[in-house]
Image (tube, rainbow, N blue to C red; front, side, top):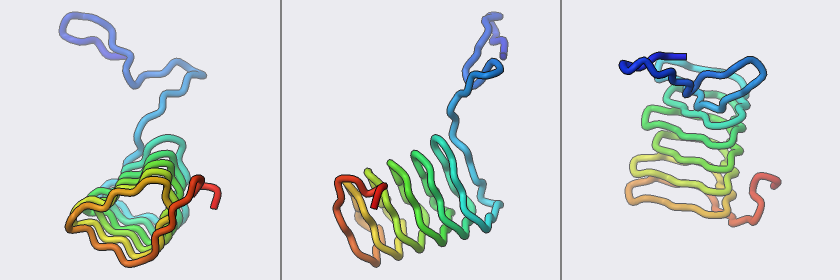
Length: 128
């Protein structure tokens, strides 16, 4: 718990034993991981991952480099990925690079994004 200037107690991001608060996990630019990642909740990757990723929401920052498959409800890519993406909502930002197939329910591809692969719309891409 933190006290603000007025002396009020703030509990944002603080949990009593047994209570779980979902927070975004971050893989920083100077981190390189080899192996599969699994997270409940949101995952922000700015570094490098060589392995498959499974989470609720995945954000790849502009410096991110991923070699492996992704399964997530929401996927927002600004960096680069080489592998299959399975996501209900997929967004390729300008300057993103995707080499691989995308299975999706909804997709947005911005001008400037580079995509080399196949697209397949699916009502349930996470189960495919």
